[in-house]
Length: 172
Image 1 (cartoon, rainbow, N blue to C red):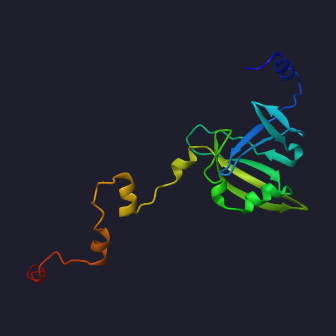
Image 2: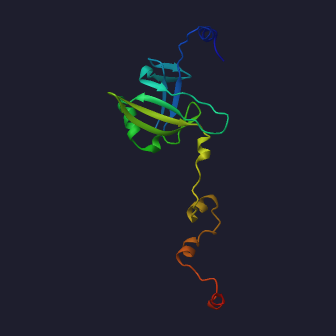
Image 3: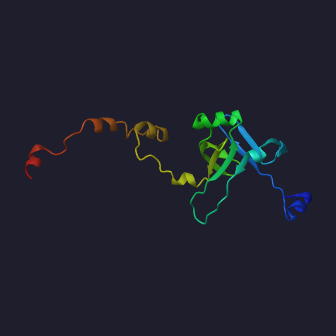
């Protein structure tokens, strides 16, 4: 999968590596690279964030536990800052190129520079989230449109009925 020039570069003791990260936001797809200049790769132009951005440590585990991956970019760029303080639906639960899932976005000010950190989780992270324990008639109708089993649930809860007769209750 690599070219001869890439193999020669990888054989050197010190190799400059460029990472490409694709974020599939709700409104648009953002493609960034760790290069200092924009690059064309894979048919797309990747914005070079260079030293303005960083990628956290990639951790692997033997089990199924989820390990997050943090992407950090300088918050001086207005477009990224507006994304960070905007609606969470723009990024939460969206996919990233590295087969991770975007989860939280933090804005912080360290010393005199601001930064935006995007935390990405593996797809196994979703397995830890438990579904809601309560089910109402509308949720049930989405899955089973013809089933009327939960249509009377509100009436049963709102109007309790005595199931035992008064005579039976007096016997105790």
